[in-house]
Image 1: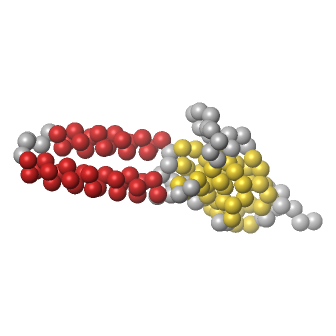
Image 2: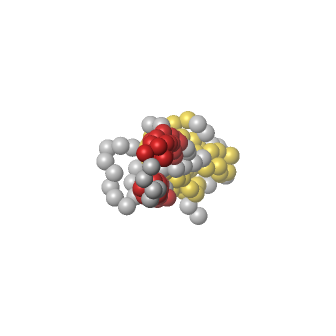
Image 3: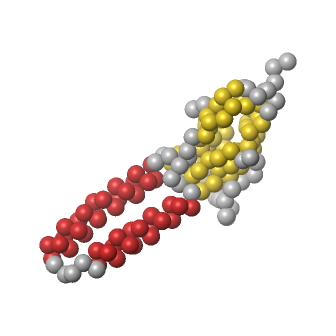
Amino acid sequence: MNMEARVLICHKLLHKRGAVSFQIKIDGQRVGEVTGFEREYLVKPGSHFAEVTFSFVKSNQVNFAIDEGGEVRLICTPNFWVVLLPLSIIIAFALLSSIPYSPSTMLYAGGALMVLLPILVIVMVLKPGMLVKLRIEK
């Protein structure tokens, strides 16, 4: 008898989401959506990896091994550390404003911030796991 294994996934948030849905990929293949309630997907027993995607945003990759008839519970949550990004931008501009007034210094420091901050934001958004975390519930 060839039994399959179950992967249960749930998206935990502090608020209700709208019509936008994250996609669950198991072994690189899209298998379905991640919603606020628990969803079940069947996989073959063995070693697998899973990730959650939405457009260009990806979660971290979770590896797991599952036996016949077994189950793995995955939880998808937002990464709350990303709120430090706006705080770091505010601190950077506060430090810039504390520099004694010199037009050339302000010009170079402001120019550097205007070039580097968007790059930092883009890297943080595109790096897997920065906005959304996936973990195995024990």
